[in-house]
Image 1: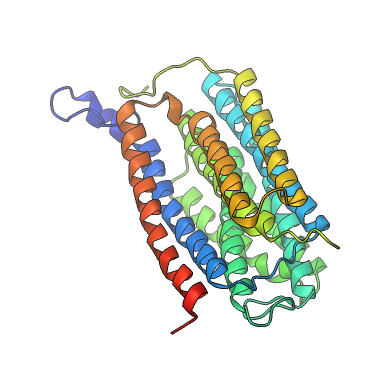
Image 2 (image 1 turned 90 degrees about the vertical axis):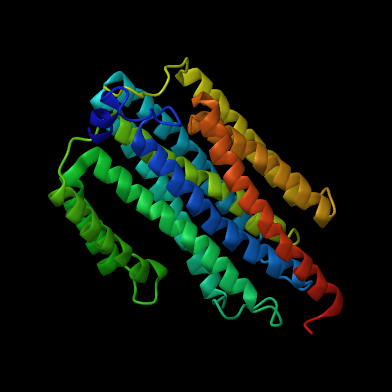
Length: 252
Length: 104
């Protein structure tokens, strides 16, 4: 509403340089800065990779299949997200919510598959400070977990963001239920048992936003949520080849 | 609703389905390239990065709708981030030095 009021006064303010609404420009600027965060992590990974000829290649056929399915999930979630944006522009609230929920399902599948991959690697002895394949290259674990962990956190935040846009306050008890389910059904040394606390943080932040500024999210809100989601997909398009495909172990 | 609303443009489900199919196809090509190890590592890296750049251009252009934004938005957003990311490549010279000379 604020930008409508400002731009509505002809002659008093310049029109938007980018010819679109302010929230979208804000999200684009955030995504550009976030892309530098991921850029720095990808360059740190690549720097270590170049400077260590003994870089491990631990990803067997199963890992590559798993990562390929994860990629398929993210690409499909981008398709459902863009269909949600189309439905929102048509004013079709029901299908907007349905497509967003499907997007969240794909995103959640990605996080679960990735968490399982982490659990498997940790079971093989890989930690941020060591790995069982190359004792002289302890950086592998640190760079791998930082890069993929940062991405997984972004996907989780994206799922929560979409849940808030689609379901508003009704999403909060669902989040708490998922947290309880995961926390009480996983063993104490499981990755999910610890990482699920991110959901509680999500409940806290989303709760503050929803109760301080309750609103009915419109087509513009769906579109900027979509921008964030596609960005998360975009980043994975570089992590997947650099981290997984370049470390494929063909034999075995 | 907004006086500076986004330009209306022709887009439909069919177009998005095509982009999605191409993205899946390119991913399949990447996996085959990596698993068959057709190229040497450096060539493999180049091939994978070219494919990833094509995929990212499709995502940014179609899914993120940058293709339909005005030229100022396209140029300001993309040149800024591309320039910053390219500048980070300067660190690779040091990585190559370590590879050749060791940590000294």
